[in-house]
Image (cartoon, rainbow, N blue to C red; front, side):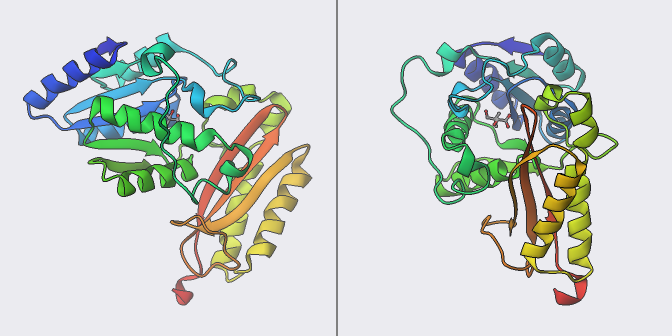
Length: 286
Ligand code: PAF
């Protein structure tokens, strides 16, 4: 496995893989790799001849009040994980390599970025789409792998690829959870002991709502009230949003009459947790 820091070295390494007629997979990450990221690398390993992992804590997707400085940086552990999971290349650029000067170009996906996390993180998705577009241009992957945990991010990236005719297949991979249901996240380490005990309520509450929908309760306001009630009962938590949206357009729905997604963001202490779950109408309605 090669570790490179520059765009030029990355292009050269990928060009060698291409010369060997290998398909190229990219797993974009911000490091602090957990089982969720590792499942992406392993899926990439199964599907592609050459697997590149980027590790870059992208400053442009953090708001001024957010945790850019505190974001965990664990390069040695990340390196071992990538090696064990069979990556061929880690691209770990410095900020200056990715942003040598103030960039004048931003990739902005409208509408899909307005709601959910976009409502409280106004610069976030422009930062994500711009850096992912740059990574696609640097690595030139055939396939790129993203977790469903960041459901809105996945939808936004899919749309960017579609609208800009980027020659990349985007694969969404299932969320990996702790045994108690908490979705793995690099930010879980901000949780204290009580918050960690409380956090699985998010998944449990969404599951209850998804089961209720399957049993025929299709009114979204009622389902959301149930989820919010479960969260409030569990202890101190600041609900940013709980929404049920069309699984593709992310439009809010009045009732579950198509494939939908429950999406939520909840702050426990200084940790903002996001999660989502598929929700469907009963089989008989479809
Ligand atoms: O999901 C992430 O870790 C980041 O948003 C990404 C896609 C690597 C872009 O910086």
